[in-house]
Image 1: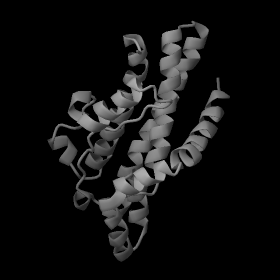
Image 2 (image 1 turned 120 degrees about the vertical axis):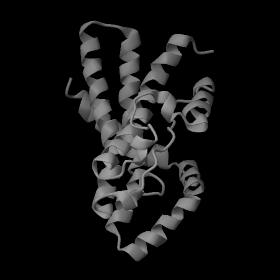
Image 3 (image 1 turned 30 degrees about the vertical axis):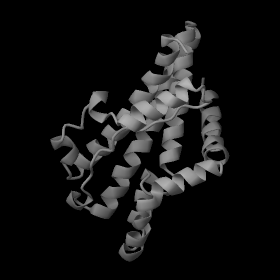
Amino acid sequence: MPNFQTLLIYIVPLIFAITIHEVAHGWVANQRGDSTAKMLGRLTLNPIKHIDPVGTILVPGILFFTGSPFLFGWAKPVPINFNALKSPKKDMIAVALAGPISNFMMALFWLLILSFVLKIPNQFLFEMAKFGIAINLVLGVFNLLPLPPLDGSRVVAALLPNYLAYQYNKLEYYGLYILLGLLFLGVFEHVVLPIVNMIRYAMFTLI
């Protein structure tokens, strides 16, 4: 049974990763004219405001306590009214990319922590920083997949003509099932992880 310290190593970076990801969406949307997230109190780093019982607690908990080789989760999506954006198509891209970009920035933050820890060895912070880099790269790359409702699909929809975007967005009704099928077929192991490992290797050469 994993101990409390081990739990913290994984939970702290995961909570920050998914919370800041959602806040980034809402913050950019607010800058571009949609104040929905702000009015609902979602532009806060308080993780309680972003907890999804399944994605933030159940799924990571099951993965952790069953000894899964990777930990994954998600927060409650920040509501975005794309029609309220100043330039819906252009701003949709900015709002969608804000989440993954925030994850890549957090990966760099954990890299700085890791470089600091190497100078004053601390196994706890070392393991936490390593996982912080990994989970943020996974979330950043994973969310860029062009499958509704992932962030990458919002970018694709914004670039398509309206009639094609409408048809494409219909996939969101089946997105979860398609995603589960792709995961079963190995999209995580054969697409997401290789990209993550390539970026992580490049980052580690910096320290």
